[in-house]
Length: 301
Image (tube, rainbow, N blue to C red; front, side, top):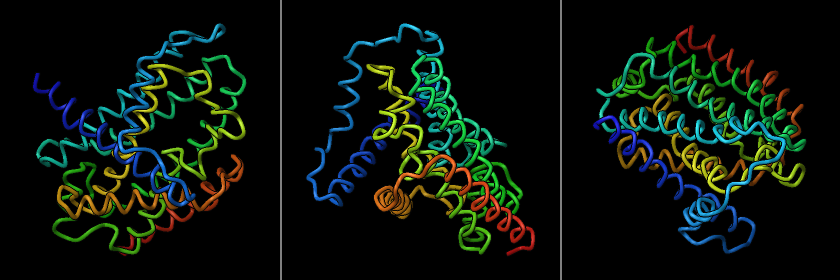
């Protein structure tokens, strides 16, 4: 019963509500940049409600079980990450050794579920979106892991609470040269994990009509939307815990809002990349930069 309570709050409920609000902020600021009014405050929650009262449509030639379970598994994975990160914000005693690695792997599952669900739909445009998604994942994950290696090297810890405790005593990881490099790499990888412009390549509504999500409707699409809302909160908070110290304070909220603002700015000031451009950018740009950061961290810089 206690475990269920923690999964619901601060796990699902708090992060879902915060994610809906963050999505509204993102859409409202984007609208203002484009000289539009933008949606009302509760529009993200209206969108979810509308999806959950609609009928589920299953493509005729799809692999039914994989198609239906992929959104649910993606939602479950993000809920577990939300619980781990949320409990660390409330009380660092709730953490466990290796929870950093657990969170990183769980944050990969939504992308894998997008690939599986799109591939199982039997739609050629969805398959194209799945192909782009897997290439994008193979591109940014390598750079993402190099960025995470730097706080691990500097703290000799794989526990989120211990990394935050180290920063509380010695200053933020992002205040060092190697930490700054790692934080920049992680932020750009975060943009790709969130599938925001310029890395919204698997969805690309103007090119492949939603790509990976083209066959999804009703509650199944709703689970994917909820997952996206929650990722918009939990991924920045995860990075803040690792690179910028404890965030369970009003200052922590300001730190999160700063990352959200960076996400929105990147989204509105860059064109969508082609998948080959994204692969080259991560493999030959960010990954070598992350390796330089690792070398600097080993030198104590």
